[in-house]
Amino acid sequence: MSQYPEAQFIKSANAATQFVPDTGAEVAFAGRSNCGKSSAINVIVNRRQFARTSKTPGRTQLVNFFSLSNDRRLVDLPGYGFARVSDRKRDHWRNLMADYFEIRQSLRGLFMIVDIRRQLTEFDRQMLSFAEHVALPTHVLLTKTDKLKRGQAAKALLEVRRDLGEVATVQHFSALSRQGEEAARAKLDEFLSAIK
Image (tube, rainbow, N blue to C red):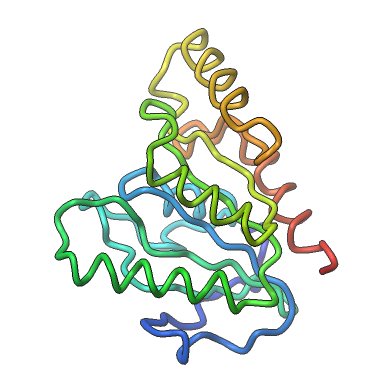
């Protein structure tokens, strides 16, 4: 059963003028293309195909708004860093995300999804510095933890934690084994309950 039984898709936006009304509280999910972002969202919400998954990287190309309950939302942002799109498309995504972060008063936190096997990329660092610039609390999910041996996963977590310092919190996560789902859900609820 879903942890958010009232959860539902609201709308997709391709421009700031199409964003849902800026009320209540929302948490954004961002990550490099093919990092497991949609799968992570589905596990945290505990609803299959809530956010559509695909074997083709870069499928999330719009800002997707989902209602969780009582004016509390989850926002699935376009995947970044995927090479097989035009420069024009990439620039549009960058501007759309910049608009989103700069104008949303209801934004309470950011989940950054990172493939544990690749660790932090330059695109991730850009996102982190932007979140830091707007004083947005950030939580990093190191996804696909099940792909590494326990010792390797522990080492990767320590390295990313050291790399991040005070900029963000970080945890292991696996959509396949559901490792870390409760901790991630607790962090989502913590962000949504934060008073701005």
